[in-house]
Each structure stands twice: as structure tokens, then as C-alpha cells.
Length: 193
Image 1 (tube, rainbow, N blue to C red):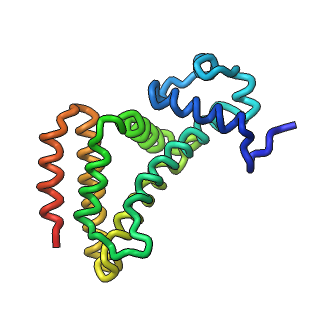
Image 2: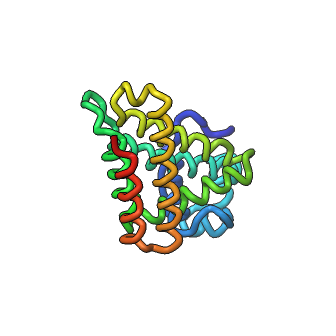
């Protein structure tokens, strides 16, 4: 009998959280079920039973990472409030991205994004595209409606996203927070109204 895939068991949730913490520390690139299972107090057999196979586990881990990403983006959401504007929103996103304690999630995000581009099928399918749309939707929600609905508004939020993603890659590669933050703020100022 296979587990109910629609409602995860408490054990499945517990092991997913433990596996998520493991991949935040070790990445997904060379994920092997045996060391993972040992590290989280399980067995490869239990992981296979709960997640179907290694790809199923990777998909669950990517969904878990995306949940964290969306939670971050939701904090920018302007439900019931006036939009704060693209530049302040992008500045808030950068402030969050630049915090040292977020590096494990961001490295995992970059790894999954890259794998999604190189291996567009299987466990990674659609991750990069979905995350682009997630971020663009949040940036759009932060724009006043006339701007949000215009071609120029779409171009501006695409540029803001490109600046943030490029700066993130540079920050992860070098750790040079001050230099990169200065550049981000300079570019965001150019995006101002």
C-alpha cells in the first residue's frame, strides 16, 4: 500500500523538514539517500516509501524551499494597502537577500534554479520558470496600478528582478556586501519614477 500523496503524515513532514535542513547545509547536487537517511535518523527504504523515489524527495524539497521563498515574498505583499512602489519593494528584497543567515536558502535556490535550466525534465522541471513568475508577480503587486498594467511597468520590474538576481549571484560568490549593496542601490535609484 502506498502512502496518501495528498495529505502527508506527521512522519513525512518531520523527515521532510529534517531533509530540508540537511540540503540547506549540504546542497542537492550529490544528494545520496543513504547519507541523508543516516543524518536525519531514517533509512533509504523509509524515504523511498514516503516520497516514492529520489526524484519525489527532490521535488518535495524544492517545494519546501519554494514555500520559504514565497513566505518571504508574501511579507512584501500589500494586501489591503497602497502599493509601496517598485524601488522600495526591490530595496526590501535586497535587504533580505543580503542577510548572512539567509545564505543556505539562497545557495539552495541558486542550485535548484541552475539545475532546472540544465535539466528541464524530472525533479527540477519548471522550478526556474515558476520562481521568475513568483518574483515578478510580487514586484508587480508593489507597483501602482497604472504602472503595473503598462509595458513600461513590466519592463521596470523585469529590470529590478535582473538587478536583484545578478547582485545575489555576485554576493554569494564574493561575500562583498558593501560593494554590491552600493551598486544595487545605485541601480534602483535609476529605476525611480
